[in-house]
Amino acid sequence: MPLVSFHKVTKYYGDQCLLSDIDWEINPGQHIGLIGPNGVGKTTFLKLITGDVVVDTGEVTQRHNTHIGYLSQESNLTSSTSVLDEALSQFEQIHQLEKQLRYSETLLEKSRGIPTEIERHLSQYGQLEEDYEKAGGYTYRHKTLKVLHGLGFKDEDLTQQVDKLSGGGKTRLRLAKLLLGNADLLLLDEPESHLDLEATEWLEEYIVDHPAAVLVVSHDRYFLDHTVKYIAELDNRDLNTFPGNYTQAMAVKTDVLKTQQREYDKQQTLIKKNEEFIRRHIAGVKTKQAQGRRKNLKRLTLIEKPSKKPSEISLGFTSMPRSGENVVILSGISKRYGTRDLFSDMTFTLNYGKKIGIIGDNGCGKTTLLRMIVGKEKPTSGNIKLGTKINIGYYDQELSRLSQKSTVIDELYSEKPSSNEKSLRNILSRFLFRGDDVFKEVSLLSGGEKGRLMLAKLFLKEPNFLVLDEPTNHLDILSRNALEKALVEYTGTLIVASHDRYFLENMVDSLLIFESGGTISHWSGKYSEFRTFRKEQRFNNIKTQVKNLKRKPAVYNENKKELKKNKKLLEKLELLIGEKEKEITFLEGNLNDEKTFSDYAKVNLIGNTYAQAQQELKKLYLEWETTTLKIEENT
Image 1 (tube, rainbow, N blue to C red):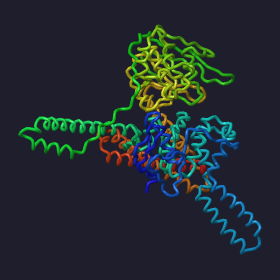
Image 2: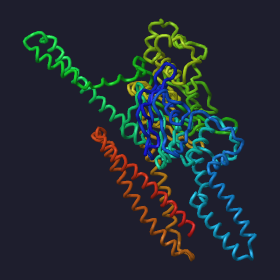
Image 3: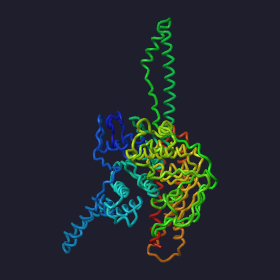
Image 4: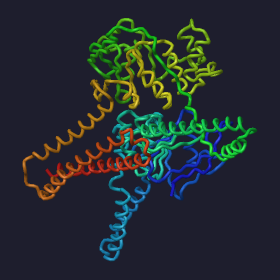
């Protein structure tokens, strides 16, 4: 039975219709990505499910006793408890069982010397202990710490008072509580927006294994590719669903629209041909034939015209002059704030036409490096030299170069005062500012609109060196796709700091990685190649540790038999892991086959098998790690 069902649901926002006559359902265990342009109603859609917003017509129903966990974009934690205690508060049942166990222990203590009482209280204690174990009483603290650490909380953060956290910190803590809860359905509204790269990748793996149904709103296409098996797209007041992750679903959508357009065009040609025949012969010798065709046309089931593509920004950096070969040279630069070194002795040269991405945890110095390159900050030591004929276009993630009291069109005048209004309006229309929108005050714009305005200013500047700091932060998927399309064709030089891995995968050919401890490494290749390398690196490190354990000289151990058994199990697990990895590689090859995308049944079958294989691999890894720890304890 579905967890949630939409029955002919229609919803207005003022006089604007967001949803019209929607029929849809969410089934247990489904992982679904909800996408659509900014302002299309995705958050409203989630609130219809929770009941925070009511439908205008139709009905949203829930299965009896369905527990829903909702991560909204508002930070509403005001507790004065510690971060750890707030997270542990999710386990109220376990806390009650702990109190009952302690009380049962006191009763046992008091019943000493009374055999019948001891037997009765022992039986009660045994049942309580069994319930406690089933509820996760012996593992819930470890599980809580694992989730908090995974979402970026350090040990020193766990004692921090909740109401002293930043908005992003509160959102991460609310997410942790939801993941630790027992929801049947998780509604996650941009859960990755306050996470760094490492925490986002941890969350991806956690969601893949989560047994609850998940409906996630996200503009992060890489995140959607790794967490969901279905895509639901809000478009033109309708909800369309496609099988597969984001990339697979969009391929299916393209094929569906092409087929629909072909069938529509074919039918329209037939209709026009028959209408012309009727017009010419309705009063002639072929009257009966004309009348027959008219009846046939009336009985014809009309194919719906495919919906127009939503408006998207139109970019193109084409007329910039070429710079010198060496665009920027960093010579032994370092940056220190007080006693903290962000990085030191960094030497790097960026050549003309190269496109490089910067990744690393929040606060590691990515933005600082970009600010130093554009001259807004100075290094503590070392030199930064720009090449000849450099025209920099700088996009800062705070959008601080926009004057809040200016109008949209005045912002473009400030970039090129000699321009006329018509030419500026033409440029702004390409960034979806049309009509009176150009006279809006910047302070009234949404985050996405401000991002588009900043890109319009960059376009007007015609830079040959783009320095971009999180340029996709405020953009919806359509706008991100348009930006990527423009940058693929961009012939200048690009350096970009971003958490958007889909963007990085398509845009850059090398990476600067800000590591912990202030070191910076360089990776020549795609982001996906780097991620695979790091996974293999971690796995090989663990394998080396296990091999070293196996090489330890044999010593007397009372658990020698257990040790031998675990070593045999470890060898078996390593073989099973190898076989499962080969199976996953084979399935990935099938999923990436273009022929698969248009076959819904095949996508579902292979996708489900792939997800199951990944889950089985993770279980094997977990058993492998547990067995390794047992071996370490007994040697």
